[in-house]
Length: 472
Ligand SMILES: Cc1cc2nc3c(=O)[nH]c(=O)nc-3n(C[C@H](O)[C@H](O)[C@H](O)COP(=O)(O)OP(=O)(O)OC[C@H]3O[C@@H](n4cnc5c(N)ncnc54)[C@H](O)[C@@H]3O)c2cc1C
Image 1: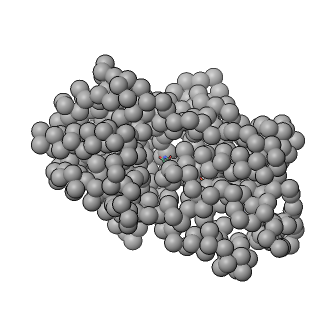
Image 2: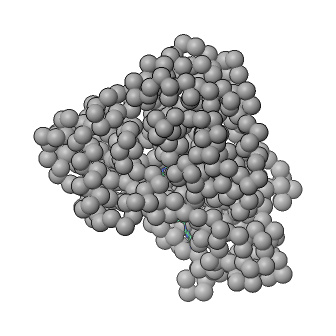
Image 3: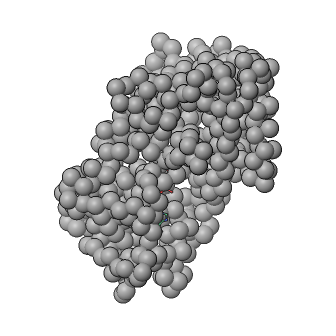
């Protein structure tokens, strides 16, 4: 079995297949694993995440993958979400003693940044989702409706849209509400906030992202497989509707019984022979899947400026601030700290800010982005006003995720492709999930299941969703 691509989708497929005894050969073009959800060392010596990544309690397949590769203890779950606005007003969301779906009701009722009218309109929309068990009938409208239209139909107040729905969904789905399929938006609230008490808990890595994949190589190699880095695939050979091999530099060919292509959709499409791309509908439509950007901004201050592990910002360009120094401290307490260079120098504090759907920032210069974000950080973190910014880095990912625009699911191909021996994985394939680490792992598991079924050895890797609990 050949797996191309060492992002989460390829790793999930490779590890699952290796566990069943297949000899997996995984090829990755970069010198490290993890794809978009990874970390690397900058020329200045700092080890940074490509961007902060978080998971949620409802991401059951990602949790299963971390367990398989021995990384579960590198994720810390938080059950308190803190929101701050530029005036310094704070709000908190957490589960109380009530059973689902009312577990957040207490903190929601006390949530200062929303007015009573905002809260009543949100409660009405939530009731609608609850009554329909997560699938209100207008999600099946043709053409599919946007999340913004879905909210307007439910007469949501401006405050509710801007300070609640938009805050949660732009971060979760990396797209503006008017460009998001309502199905994805409603699903976030059903799976993370309503159907189970633990679905909303935020899991944050306590190590740089690349360290989460330490166990993947050995999981594959222990079963006789290989992981080859710096090995970009340059072409896919297809004859009579069957993959016959993959081409590397110097015209080197590798072949196998089956192939999992776990590449970004644009790369996969470019590697296909023209005739195949144009004649197979599942491939010719890939160009219709659009990209959405995320910008990550990294600041090192000369002193401690933040006391929480992370906060969500309201009414600003900056959406999240993560206190990386505090988050990594857990791992540094362990006997073998994963990366010594992450130890905070003297009293420095390292923060990482995230701006999803950052279309407006893409044309801006690095310095303009730093100035904008610094101003907003200083508004919400009073201690940073006196502090000196020692270093700053901006990482713009123009193709961070696929855009979950209305109807995008019709362009997402299933993992079993129409070409013999070819299986597809990647967050963009048909998983029902948006572009997330959970979606990527699901796609990898589904591709592994399809490959095993094709070989007459069916097996199941996909994990069930969290079961509804409480009154659900
Ligand atoms: C800035 C940013 C922030 C994000 N935040 C979150 C978050 O908080 N939570 C969340 O769940 N998700 C988040 N995501 C989304 C998440 O990272 C992706 O959904 C997931 O990592 C996709 O995994 P994948 O394996 O499908 O694709 P990729 O990670 O893109 O993997 C594809 C792999 O193929 C390799 N490759 C490409 N071309 C070739 C070639 N020719 N030959 C060999 N190998 C090749 C690439 O190097 C890469 O390793 C974020 C993404 C970004 C970019």
